[in-house]
Length: 325
Image (cartoon, rainbow, N blue to C red; front, side, top):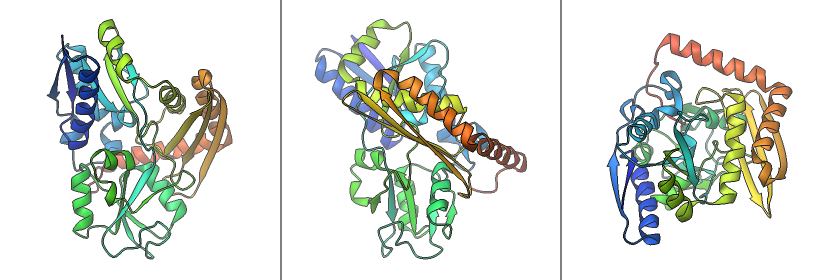
């Protein structure tokens, strides 16, 4: 039996795909698992903000096309890159145990290793509106500029002095053996993560029962799946993407799920927060309930303003290098 995994070609994407392949081989020694590298539109566009050219779906569409075309059997995604709605005929068949969901602050040599310790007017790199919003709320004095590229490229720009600090997902740095580059892991009350950050999703064709059974047996983690379902339900209810500063994080303990979420203004001038909890079996309902709470408390206006600003930016055209969430 052979399985073919479709993956992007970045170091992190390859680590994730190989990690899944190794787990599958360990469970079923006779299984042959091969990788097919697929270049996505998000990989090709390096000088325009993703919000201006289609958002996070740009990192998965070509891989999903390969799945639907039966060129590959399985895709391994960072779940934070997967849009709330999947194409007809595809499913997230398994969600693996979540890694550290926090964001990480990395600083150049000589800079204080904390968000509070950054010098007045420090130059910080990120293209995520979610991170931008929360950074400005915590430190309005910071000068924040767009940053694109893979993890190595971003760290190199930091080393070269283009920035005083950058913000990256802790999980990606941990997976690449770069945890030593982290100055501080930002707590959730300072920087709430992206939807499903730290979780891996395994996408397959809905009619491929054998592959679904195989990967669920090897990799599926029920508590992570419930947490991700709550977060992604919230995202879908808010109709959010890269154009809007939305963050959420859910945890599951002893069968109970707790969800925290926010909608913010891109400039950090306003933020609406919400929380919800209940049985993990009600994950989707909790996500929907918290989304409705956010909308009722002013989130609708913030979303409308963010979308209007995004449309204005698209009409004006790219102002310079920008980057993904």
